[in-house]
Image (cartoon, rainbow, N blue to C red; front, side, top):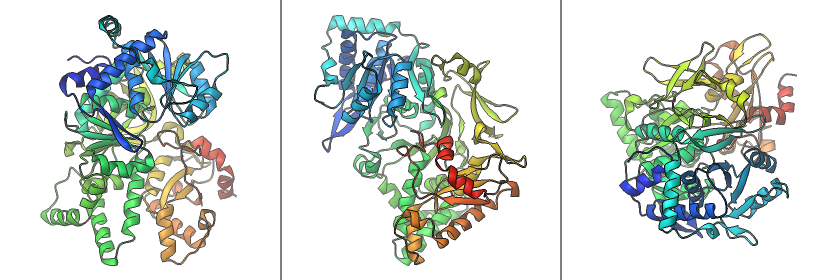
Length: 586
């Protein structure tokens, strides 16, 4: 079957690898599943229903919801009608929702529950003739199932004619990137952009056709997980939606998946929990754990090791690492990791434990994957690199070090923003804004964001991400942002790993009543200072962090310091903690 449009992936699975449990989610504490055939039937019924209320090819509709099957039904129905879906992050403030809905000229919105429905209602003017439907049954709100219409031969013929009219170069979706500053930009992606990328990613994913179960918890509103959904359809995988981030551990043990997409922040939290449990072990077991960790930190997947190391790794696996895999359900084949830089030490330890964490690199504008480490070929894996280029993608490094990208995956442009499009798309090359390098072996490595590199008052350039990644290797540091533009030296705002730090305080008889008091303890400050000094040893004197301040609360999406893909909003953090920053330079 020739897959040219995104909705073809559903038809491909139906034809080649139909699943009894194609999509599953928890409803009232029980897993509810839809077969591939049921998904296809519902999508067709919804397509007919949308046409009946006047939604046609070229119209825009929006969805604001957590991950659930209804999200996919709406997405696939829109795709096969040539209707452009505009996803809204559930965490968006009302003003951003209002801007996107107006800017994209959306005619209809699907909202998941009462809270999100209320957000949309308060976002739009009463004069705006938006149609509103909900996924949950809400009083006075039209339920999405009211749109489902029976599909007979005439309706099916009509649907088929519309599908045949949709070209691969046509607009499929507009995804508004939250970014770190300014108004959201609408990234226009065509069917071809996404289809070619999904096909390329499949070849590096390690997914086994028709046999894998995957757990999904990253937001479908982002192209990473949304194209991941299409990838899973292509691979004939069964998809299970996690109940929430808090219940991922429970869902992993229930579903026992073979694969999932992640971001470094979540894997860091998994490791934090592993270390926290290790700190509760008896002295003998704790020493065994630390020994296994030291072995893991030396591990490189592509290297050939002597017998002595392999024997030690075998013992470490039996005693320690096998328990990690059990905690992830026992079946994990590989994990795709993107959205931010993965700490090399974290990657090494997970690979040593038989958990293949494959770092990749991409952007919404690139639909999204540019490069990735291979799940089933260790020769195509390097810790600290984002991997080899995905099939069809070209990369070159500009004179100033910026990564430029070209290929069938590159966006059509920013919606209604020709000037912004011209800034980043030049002669077919997309300017990523990232600084990077390509090794002789062909591995792409990202070293920093072009706009985030800054100069000290002494004229020295500082690449903050390099410093931040090294500092985050400390078991006592959870989050960090290096500052110092036009200042005498670099400094850092540091959010400690509070779980590990609390245990350390207990061991060292340091008492505190709350986190505010904890970060002011002289012993705690000295402990973090030692971690900063250790990281500083690897950098030139002008690059070293000379001052730091400890922040007593975790940065999050909800509190505004992180984007939905968990990248730092640097400008927000600079404004929010301006007093602490000024204090470091007094």
